[in-house]
Length: 296
Ligand code: PMP
Figure (cartoon, rainbow, N blue to C red):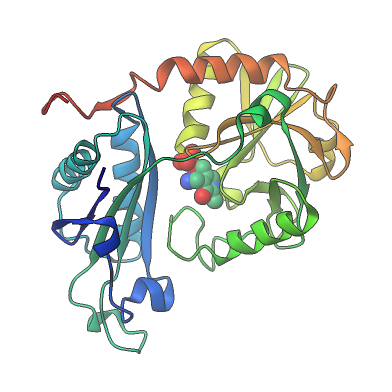
């Protein structure tokens, strides 16, 4: 079956989805993106992702050229055309084609791309066992340089972290911020649990304000847990009872070892498992149905 990509107002086949070498997204990482999941035909937290994309655009003075509802509709249409009920959507908006200089005024029109793909970040058994992670020397970009709350195409910081994780033979790694506080993973937020209290770093420390993170916080509070957004250090991670990561791609995954220190008894803990189950129970309902306009 053909895979369709939305590219600047048209649906094109995957093999024909090409952009200019003068696109400033490629030349300078000048652009923004979102990663969104479709669960059984439901675009999970659709509004939240679209809002975050437009917030990122606003922050870098990027004119997307479509309203939120227009972009939402073409995104749903891209999912429909690909006939996928379970998928990962990548929205990419770059500054568009310009010249070789930095000046965005030379880019009259944004490039808008919507890709719908299957996605499996970690093998299934990793969710049953938990994963090993390390903290890496690369620090998170500071918010006063490039604010990590902007989901920009400038992901070199995160790519370096992934390389460091790869070199160490682990699946994911943890970044500290410039002050040495725990910040986030290369593509996910972190939670630690100590004495039944759930902690996650406040986003002002320099993490992306993850939509999965916010969902998990809400689910945890509804389940009666105390959730605190507080700065913490590597030491606090080492002595935690449970540690887990959250993100659109990874969903909720337990961490069983950090920098060689076993977490808890080395298996996904009870609160992590409870929150994962609660998360699974909302993903098919809390969002926007793709197939309610055109039934497949
Ligand atoms: N941090 C970073 C750096 C990310 O790239 C992501 C993935 N978007 C996250 C955290 C998790 O955010 P979300 O739950 O919105 O996917």
